[in-house]
Length: 287
Image 1 (cartoon, rainbow, N blue to C red):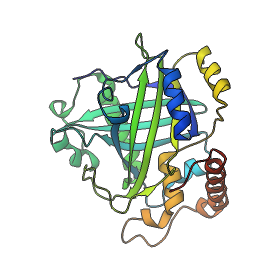
Image 2 (image 1 turned 60 degrees about the vertical axis):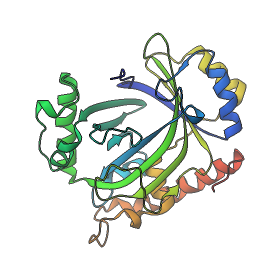
Image 3 (image 1 turned 90 degrees about the vertical axis):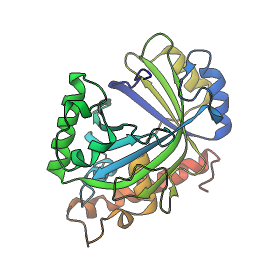
């Protein structure tokens, strides 16, 4: 099994850019980093990522992002549909934002055990991908959070990722995400098939600069030379906002219970308008 290069604690800066800028940045980044092994021999140097996001009936996690809560988290199941093994593991992930820092917890679970874990059952040791104690802590915390929220699958998000990593350590990572799609998903099917998918960022590319220590000097040079403008780009929250919250309400749920929803509606519209202006400003099409 290939080494897991996920950064468990990091800082993360996001930029929405057009494809021609992404291709120029690729040349610049290749002077400092090397292409991730998963994408090295694939078209456009990219591999497909699929995330199944969990949320409550009132989409509390989604509204936490729309409201701009400083300390928030997301619950998701990550899988790779191009893996030829039908028993390939599913990764339970908690992505938490604490002020400006990003903290991740992750546990790989054998696919036959996933349904039981979603039901609140702790997997047996043999059902875990690894025996690292951090994985056990991660899955325990995932179950606690999802149970407290009564969270269930609501959205399938997919995209193609081009990742560049440091050849020396795990301190720096640059990713280009293309073809970001979202669709409602209330079951755990773990298939690349999506029902009525909606493009989230059109043909824009989401550039993410990730680092665990100080901001690399060459990052500063890159931002200055290419005139990059930092902003927010949440594949999950922006995707729901663009497609519309009612699409992600579980059948039988007639309305949101969260009283903050009404207060956050204006912020949601502001976010959509800001995203539209951003895409127009960068010459990116929404289609």
